[in-house]
Structure formats: structure tokens, C-alpha cells
Image 1 (cartoon, helix red, strand yellow):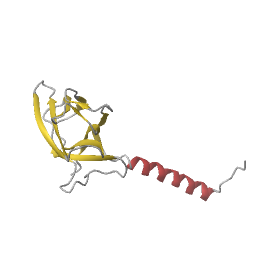
Image 2 (cartoon, one colour):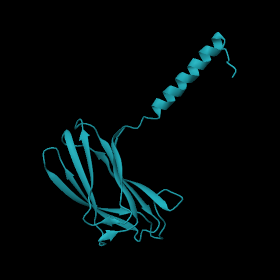
Image 3 (cartoon, one colour):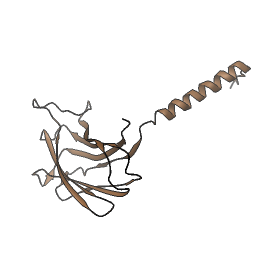
Image 4 (spheres, one colour):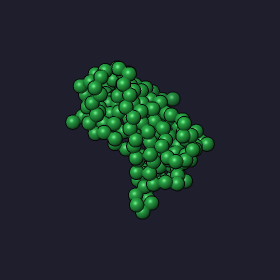
Length: 166
């Protein structure tokens, strides 16, 4: 193994290069997620009674966030949409329940998500300017609301809450 010795100018250039790599690595972490989690759905299908639970902390109630639903399905999924129930429990114990419709195929049947293989991924913006009314712990439960007792083809569901930089 041969060791290479740098001159003073080369050492300075090497240090600048390393510093640039570190800075670019840190700037790649520029997206600020308050929360980002995805749960795998059982391979047998998503049972009507099964809820996916997401628990996160909101440190203050002054920021605006982008609120996304993360959805992954395989190409054998039978429908062009997906209905979900989303129940949110606030830090003060109050609960809201919403019904969501996610369109995952266009009218011609082409999947709207990304992916070249058998899996398609959708990151669906549910709220472009969400402001949490209270600081504290929030719990979100998501369950499928289709007519199937066991819904096949949905492989993952999650939520992402991203700081809105506007």
C-alpha cells in the first residue's frame, strides 16, 4: 500500500473538498418532517377491523405543515380508489373522524402512483396548510372503509407531516 503525501495547497483543497461533502450531506437533510412513518399491511389483506395507529408529538401550534397520506399497493388491487376512515385524537382527548377517498387510478385505469414494477406508491397531499391547534401527543388511526371484509392489494399505509416552508 502506498501512502500519498499532500503539499500544503493539496491539503487545503482536500479539507475544502471534505467540508463541501459534509455540507452537501447536511443540506440533503433539509426537509423537516415532524413525522414520517409507514406501516406494512398483512400479506393476507387489510382486515376491516384492523386499524393502523400513528402517534406523534406536536411541539408548538404556530407552524404550518403539509399533511400527506402515504399509500402503496400492488397492481392486482381491484379498484381505482380507496376509501379510508381516519380518526384523530387530540392532546385534550377530543376525537374527530373523517372519511377519505383516495383516487389511485385515472379514468382509463392507469395507476397514478410511482413505480415501475408490481408496486405503486402514492404520496397524497391531504392538507397543504395544516396547523395543529394544540401542543402535545396526537394519535391517528387509519382503517380501510371499502366493502371488502379483507381488502387485498394494499401493501402499506402511512402518514407524513412535513414543515411547510412557505
